[in-house]
Image (tube, rainbow, N blue to C red):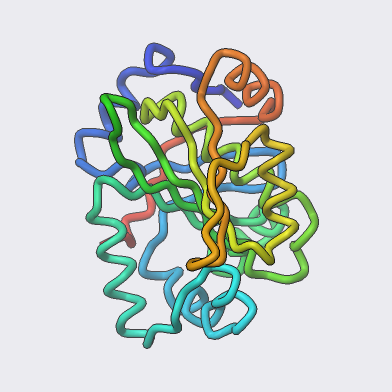
Length: 222
């Protein structure tokens, strides 16, 4: 499968992405074990079911929403150019079922901001399906998202905020070469960062050998 490695590699496709004024509205990322697709209305029902879990509420520091509120949230995420949201599909399951809803296992997000002329993104990852926790799906999905951010969105620094009790996530981001920059007892979380320098970009590329950015044609978005 052809890989898109930079802006020059496929300028027509990049133009398509940005002409619709949505960062990832018609984009899918293909990896070894996961596929990242835009968060659509057809995903909301299962996502809403996930977020009734106290475990996920604690891990994501979020409150449960009604199903109607979840649909409104999906729409707002789609319309916000500073948010980049993907649903994580298990690739093997999708190849067997061809159903995104049946293949959903979690989500990953980037929240973009600017600081001193530098584009910064706060990353988030959630593996909701317990059968896939600890199976490296979250690792791969986060790295695909980071690489997409570097090569297509011009991200210069990544940041993550993690609950102090979420030891697995803290360990994962340490392995991704993130460093702790602050700790908040008030919010019970730590902030970790990684600068996008040449050394880190080389590591990221080598860690995502199967990386393809492709059009996603399903129109069930808004």
